[in-house]
Image (cartoon, rainbow, N blue to C red; front, side):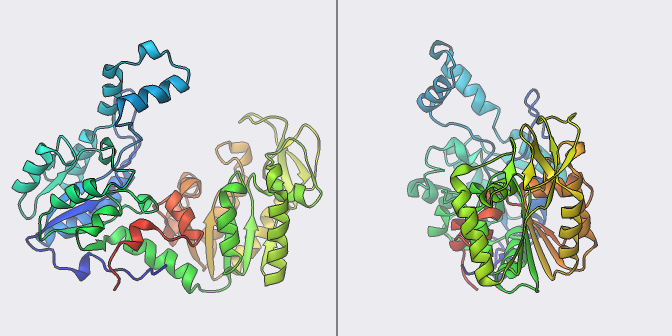
Length: 425
């Protein structure tokens, strides 16, 4: 994939309307609707402020949550979950949509920018059209939740054309929602068929740092892969075996690797269907001269509980009735030493159940090792990003990706639709 894409600095936006795709999919309090973490809104501010300072009129858009824009589909899904069909009224469906409207986002964005943000009552309807037409250079508006439109997730060309039309004949599309670029939706990829498309500063940074680490890394390149399942990291492991010098495995998926090699894993998380795959990856690593590190000792527990007491065992000999919950001290020492000599480290997935204090030491130790190394350190979004922030090491990392699924697909070497559609430099 070509990572060398044009940015907002490569195009003149003065006096033009800019359709800006942001990632405002922020967590909210279920009872009050209040935004509980505005990090994603803050992350968009540099691009928004630049566009406004350059004299653009900004039409921002984003999805929020997973609304079902069709009453019939919503009712069917609720019935499948065991809800009484008689209780599934249009009024209840409308309330689910109301809870995911963009009003709290517009309010918070306005507070952070120190200016009014005009909120449209729809995405491409009469209100959005009227407000977009009236928008002046240096002003910003926010469209309603893009997923209120049935055609959004289907990348409907008519919806994409209508969204692009809001920016007018001289409009520009700016993509700055890295967390959504792995999806070919109308607002992330489709609109680029109708407007010149460039990246904002967030995506520019992702492509520069993550793309650079994959295309031309400072070596040795060490990839640390954790998380619960081998199946969710198949493509990542396979791709990184072609470019990394060392791969470190932790988290729940380590037990499938242990079982594949004849180990006993007790009641640990196990994907029996992936044993052969694990052995294939071990063989591939050996054939390519890539060092593959697996846990040698494991902190175990009798139950999956925050109060469970850790019990140390060899990873290949976890007793019946015990489950692996974190990497042990010998493994921590080995992994920390490996990180110390790295040129570039990419980390995706925690080493254990870091949400439980008794089983957070492996993840904490790896985060500390990354914080202390001179290597370029890249945290691949999702749980890894949450862990680094929770453990207080976020400011010590070179780059923390703003994408979850997008980061994972990036590491797999997949083409990201929301990046592929941007103009090449």
